[in-house]
Image 1 (spheres, rainbow, N blue to C red):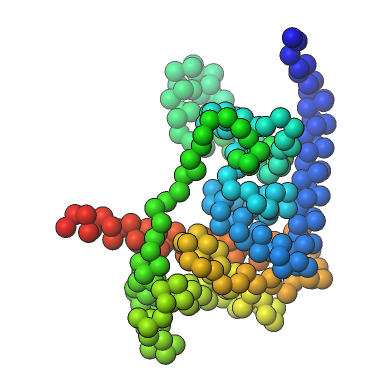
Image 2: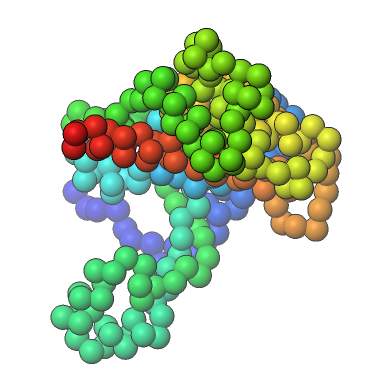
Amino acid sequence: MPGKPKMTDDERRAYSAQMRGELESVMDRAYGAMVADEGFWAAVMRTAATLADRSPVNCIAIAAQYPHATRVLSSGDWRKAGRFPAKGSTSLRIWTPIRRRTDDAQATAEAGPREAARDAAAEGEGRKVSGFKAGPVFDISQTEGDAYEQPAPAPLAAETVRDVLLTQYRDWYHEDPEQAGGYDFSREAPDAAARILLYGHAWRRITEADAPLPGQHLAEVASAAHVAELILGIAPGPAVMPPLAGIITQDKKPPVHESAVRVIETGRAIAQAVTAAAERRRELVAAG
């Protein structure tokens, strides 16, 4: 059976432009929904917490196309895992980098395959990102094949999350949140205590100067805490949509873009710091 004919260079460029245009339309619709639909804003936050290996912008793109995604890879990466796109499934589009060889990399390649292979081992060296294209990916629910166990960190007990957050708050901000807020965290349910502390950490990391519109700061803080809670397995508080509808700037991207990126990066950073500290605690306990 003859294989599918390869596209010419012109056909490939035309196809790439078409896919890029479609993804740009997806992003435009997503940005509009993020300031009009609280449910979609929450879907973006949920996607960002679930797909921690994807950039905030690509989490927005994925949420707009497949809001219940749990694991997203290219068809090539799925095949390496023994799975492949199911018949009839439609790929999702995300932004993927276009890498170009630098002059040094070209000189290395011309020097010989041994030198090229040596230098290719350094990820990112010899190539620089010159732009982005619309690349196809698939959620695990769109694939079939071998059983696949999704990578996941060991779950943390809510008590551990609470204790780590409390220690970090005292060490980093030189303030006791129990005295400042009148809380006795030992009397709170661990999840409730963790939520209060996560909100406090988000408040410290996102300033009102970053989110100046009335109500924007409170919304971003709540949403960043929400992302961290989902990542850490804490029963989450609400993801609050920022009041950014109708605002026009000279930038290509609307203000809600910066807001979402800031919220997602803040929530992820808080969760990552907690996870790293908890792991260090485990290691110290194991070492005796």
